[in-house]
Image (tube, one colour):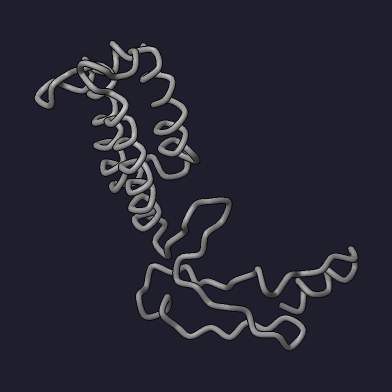
Amino acid sequence: MGTLVAYLRRWRLQLSVGKSVAAAYHLSTREARRELEVRVDNKCLEVQQAPKYLGVRLDRTLSFKQHLKEVKAKVTSRVALIHRLAGTTWGASAKTLRISTQALVFSAAEYCSPVWSRSPHARKVDVAINTSLRIITGCLKPTLCPSCQSSRE
């Protein structure tokens, strides 16, 4: 930490201790659960198991399980809104549903996806996205997803 503090002073920068957190990343469970005490200018930094950086929750194994759980909850709530718009007799037009889905569902689901898309937990988000595709295309649940995706475009 001395090197970091010296660097910040040299370039006349200040570290916001209230906004900064410390985390340990290690594949060994014992090492990852070690109690950290990180001090900057005699102020202790908060320690978090899975801090959020640029909107992405980083867990110790970088499996993004907790982040994808949060994304799935967000996407599912937005899919429910799309479902309410898609009534059979009075619902919005197909174009309106498609634009609304792109704005609400896909924007939330695909944020930083190059980072977490290879995670084994990404399937949970895919299920919610496929549900929205079925709603906007009018397909039934047994319909295969590639059919829905091709009619989306």
